[in-house]
Amino acid sequence: MTLLLLFNITNGLIVGAFYVLMALGLSLILNLSNVINFAHGGFLVIGGYIAYALSPYVGFWGALLLAPPLTAIIGLAVERVLIRPLYGRDPLYSLLLTFGLAFMIEDGTRFIFGPQGKPVAIPPFLAQPLSNELFFITGYRLFMVAMVFVAISLLFLLLRYTRLGIRIRAGTLDLETVAALGINVRMLRSLNFAVGIFLAGLSGVLAAGQLGLEPTMGTGLLMPSFIAIIVGGIGSLPGTLAGGLLIGVASGVTAVFFPAASEAVIYVMMAVILLIRPRGLFGEEGMMT
Amino acid sequence: MSPEQFRKLIVLVAIWAALLFAPYWMAPLGGYTALATRVLVLGLAAMSLNFLLGFTGVLSFGHAAWFGLGAYGAGFTLKYLALSTPLAVVAGMLLGGLCGAILGLLLVRRRGVYFAMVTIAFGQVFYYIAFQWSSVTGGDDGLRGFARQPIDFGAFRFDILTNANAFYYFVLLCFALAVGAMGFILRSPFGRTMIAIRENERRARFLGIPIERHIWISFTLSCFFMGIAGALYALTNNFADPRGLHYSQSGDFVMMAVMGGMRSFWGPLLGAAVFVVLQDYLSSVTVNWMSFVGLLFVLVVLFFPRGLLGFFQRSKA
Image 1 (cartoon, each protein chain N blue to C red):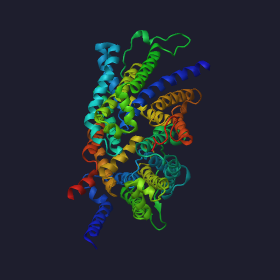
Image 2 (cartoon, rainbow over the protein chains, first blue to last red):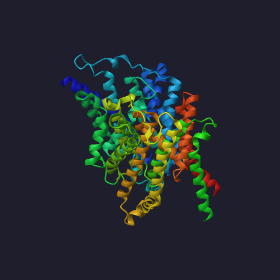
Image 3 (spheres, rainbow over the protein chains, first blue to last red):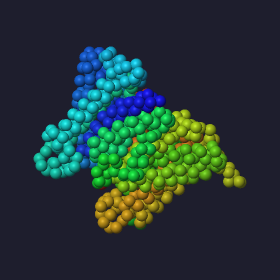
Image 4 (cartoon, rainbow over the protein chains, first blue to last red):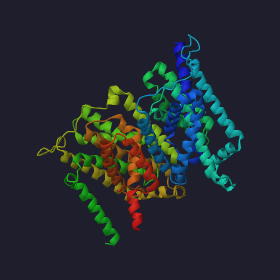
C-alpha cells in the first residue's frame, strides 16, 4: 500500500512537473500580453515532433538541445505574423485565433507524421529502473524532473536578475509606464512569447521520451495547465508552480483510492479554491479583475 | 414611419419569411431539411451566447456546458420521466439554466480573459462528469435510447418524429419563442443597462448600477436560452453526447457569433448558417477539415473581426 501510494505520488509529481512547465509558459504570455494561448499544447507537439525528426541525426541529446529553441523560433514567427496585430484588441480575438491555430497544428502533424504514436528513443542508461524495489523510478523520470527543475530555476533567475526579466515583470504590472520609459514593448512581448514557447517545446521533447508522441498529446495537457494557473492565482508565477505540483499530486493520490475521479479531482479542487479564496492560492488582490 | 424603421421592418420580414419557407427553398439549392434544422438549433445557441458576449460584453468560453446539459436534460426526460417532447425542452432549459445560475455566482467577479479562462475550466467539469459517469450518461458512447415524440393535440397529431418538415417547424416555433424573448429583454430597460455595461463598465458602476448582479442575470438568462438550444439539439439527433459539452464546441459557438457579427442581433444566426454549411461541405470533401476550420478561425479574426454583417454595414456606411 505504501509502495502504491509512493508510486502514485511520484507519478503525480512527474505529471505535475509537466503541468508546471506548460502552465508557466502560458502564464508568462497571459500576464504580459493578455493572450490565452490555446495553441500552447500545439507548440508542445511541435517541439516533440521536431525532436522525433532530429533524433536519428543528432541523437537524443542533440534533439533535446535543438528542439526547444527551434520551437521558440516558430513561436516567434507566429507571434510576429498572427498575434501581434491583435494586441490592443478585445482579448476574444487572440483567443479565437490561437484556438484555430491549435486545430491546424494538431491536424497538420497528423497529416505529416500520421495518426499513430511515434516513439522517441532515449539513451539506454536512462531507461533502467534505479532499483528493483522502486521499479517505477527510472533514470529517465529522475532526469525529467531534474530538467524541469533546472528550467524553472533558470526561468526564475532570468526574471529576477536579468534586464529582460525585470522588464517582463514590470510590464506585467503596468505596461503603459514601461512603454513610457522608452522600452520597446513589441520586442518585449515577442521575447516573452518566445520564452513561453521555449518551455512548451522543452516539455514536448521530455514528454516524447516518456510517453511517445501523438498529435493530440498537447490538448490533454492544456486544461490541467489552465487549472494550475487558476488554482495558483492568476498573475503569480510561484502560484502557477505550486498549483501545477498540487493538482499533479492530488490526481496521483486520487488514482490510488478512486481511479475514475483522478481527472475530476483537479476540477473539484479548482471549484473549492475559488469558493474560499477567489483570487487563487497566491493571487494578488485586484489581479483577477 | 421613418425610412430607417421601414428598412428594419423589411429586413425582419425577409428573415422570418426565409426561415418559414426554408424547407422549400433549401432543397432546390442542394440542401436538405435536416441541415436547416441544424442551422436553426446552432443558430439559437450562438444567439444565446451572443446575448452575453455581444450585448453585455462578457466573454464566456464555456457555454457548450449549458448547451450539453440542455441536451442531457431533454434526453433524461424522454428516457426516464415522460414521453413528452415539450416537457423535454422545458427540462433541458431548466437543467442548463439552473446549473448556469449556480456557477454564475462563482464567476461574476472575474472579467475579460480571466472570465473566459474560468468558464472554460468549469465547462470542462461538466464534460468530465458526462464522460466519466457512464452508468447514467452513457459515457463516451453518449446517451441513447430515446426519441422525440409526436405531439398530440387530441383532434390532430403533429408528427415531428418521422416528418422532417414538421420537426423543422416545431424547432422554428421554439426558436421564435426564445428569440422573441431575447429581443424583448434587449429592448427593456434591463437590456439597455446590459449595453451600458458593455460600453463602459466603470461609468455604469458610478451611475449606481449593480454590475455584478446584472452580469449574473444576463449570464443566467443566456444559460437558459442555451439550455433550450441544447434540448432541441438532442431532439434533432435523438442522441446526446459529451462532445456537446466540450470546450471546442464552445469555441465553435463563439466563432459563429463572431463570424456573423457580434454587435448585431441576427449576426450569430448568419454565422451559424455559414459555419454549419461549410463544415458539412468540408467534412464531405476532405479528411483534413479540421485544418480548414482552424484556418477559417484565423482568417476571420485577421480579416473580418466585425463579422459578415459588420463588414457589410461598414462598407455601406
